[in-house]
Image (cartoon, rainbow, N blue to C red; front, top):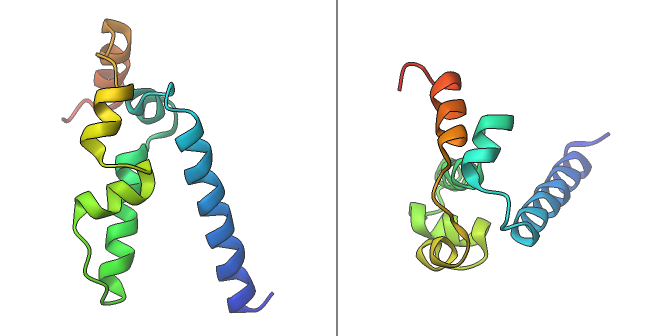
Length: 98
């Protein structure tokens, strides 16, 4: 497989992942972190880092809007719930140094 094809496939997979996460706002970031070790905010940080590596200026909020599909504050107000004690305990167990 040539590099251009690989890059195109990776980009398509990323767009599909982002679309899936946008379609599932019921899945909380803390659940993603507890189960997979990353969340929408992580994707946003990785997106911003990739932009910066290529000389594209982008701040964190711009990257989050790309991943969330709307400004983060709006997404948070619409979809984010308070973490349950179980979610917090799972977070603490998987991130003991934080």
